[in-house]
Length: 522
Picture 1 (cartoon, rainbow, N blue to C red):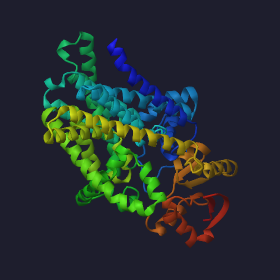
Picture 2 (cartoon, rainbow, N blue to C red):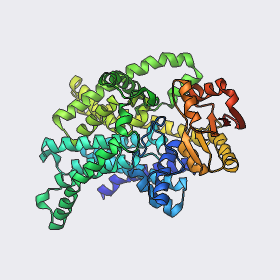
Picture 3 (cartoon, one colour):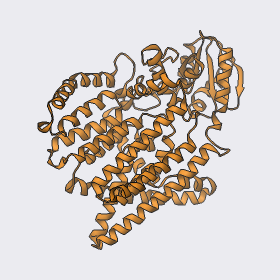
Picture 4 (cartoon, rainbow, N blue to C red):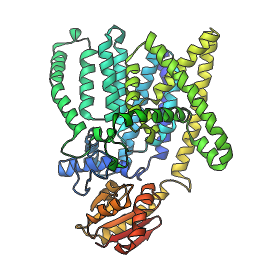
C-alpha cells in the first residue's frame, strides 16, 4: 500500500504535465525548417524509398545542415505519416509522449542515485517544466527519441549493480552515450544497445535464448561501425557531421575547414556561453527577457550578476561532479563528461539551450550534490542540509512552473506569438503554388519547409559574406524565384544587398508583410 501511495505524486505530476502539454498542442508549424527537415526525410522514405526528396535541391556550398542528419528519427516518423498523413498534431503528440516517458525514466535514475523520493520528484518536476523542455516539446526535433534512449540505457546500467562492473565498460558506454546525443545516428544507438545488453545483462546467468540474441547482436557491431563511419564522413553526399563540426564557421561554409588552432579557440567561447547560460537553463529565462525588454537599464545591471551566478553554479556543479566521480562513480559521469567535451569543441555557443538539453537535468543533480557537500563541510548537519536542498528544489520547481505558464501563454494566446509571424509565409506558399510551374527553381530561407508545403523545387538561400558570391550563386538558376524574408538576419546581410546592387535583374512579383517574392531576370 505504501509503495502505491509513493507513486501517486509522480503519477499526478505526469498527468499535470500531460494536461499542460495538451494546452499548447496544435497542428501548426513551430520551427518551420527545423520541423520540416525531419518530416521531409520521412515523407521521402515513404514515397520515394530514399532520404533525399526530389523537391529539395541540396547544395553543399550553402547548406550548413548535413544532408542526411539524424536518419533514425525520420524512420520513426514514417509509420505515423503512413497512418495519419502529415498531421503535425499527431507528430507533436509523439514528441510529448517521448518526453513524458523520459521523465519517468529520469525519476527512476534519480531515485537510484539519491535514494530519496521527494528530491527525485522535484528534480523530475524541474525537468518537466524547464523552459527548454516546454519549448522543445512542441518541436519535432530528434533530441527526444535519442534522449529517451540514453536515459533508458543509463537506467539499465545503474540498476544492474554497475559497481561490480569494471571501469572499462562504463567508460565505453559513457563515450557512446555522449557521441549518440551529439551525432544522433541510429547505428551508434544500436551499437550502444548491443554494448549495454551484453555487458550489463550478466551473460552467465542468461537463458540460452538470451545468449543467442546477444551473440547475434554482437555480430552486427562491425557492420554498424562501418555504417557509422560512412555516415559521419559522407563522401558522396556532401558535407557530413565531420565537415559541419570542423567547419571554420557553422553558417558561412565558404570559410572552409577549421584548423586545430581554430578548434582550440572555440573552447573559451563555448565555456563562456556555458557559464552565462547555466542560470537560464536551470531557472528559465522569461523573467530576464521581460526585465531586459521593459527595463533595459536594470537588465544591464542584472546581466553581470547572472554571470556571477553562472560562475557559482558552475563551481557547485564541478564539486558535485567530482564528488560522484570519486565516491559513487556511475555511467552518468562518463556520459556528461564526454558529451560536454564534444560540445566544447563544436558550435555549442550558437544554440546553447538546445545543446544543453541532453545533460541539463544532470547538471541540476550535480548542483544538488555540490551544495550538499559544501553545507556538510561547513555545518556538518545532515538534516539542515537536506532541508536547504529541498527548499531550493521546490523554489526552482515553482519558478519553472510559473515560467512554463508564461511560455505557453506567449505561444498560444499572446498577440506577439511567434506563430503569427509565420502568416506571411503561408500566404507566400499559396501564391507560389498558384503561380510557379514545376520547372522553376525557388531560392528561399526555410527551403525544406517551402519544398514540403509547395511541392515545388526549392534550394536554400546562399549565405556568403561577399555579395558578389551571392549574386554568382543566384546566376546558376536562370529565371528563378526568390523568396526574401526581410526579418531574417542572413537575408538582411546577404540577399537584400544583392537586390539593392543588382536591382535591374530582379522583378518584384508579390509582397506579403516581411516576405517579398522576386523573379531573377538572367
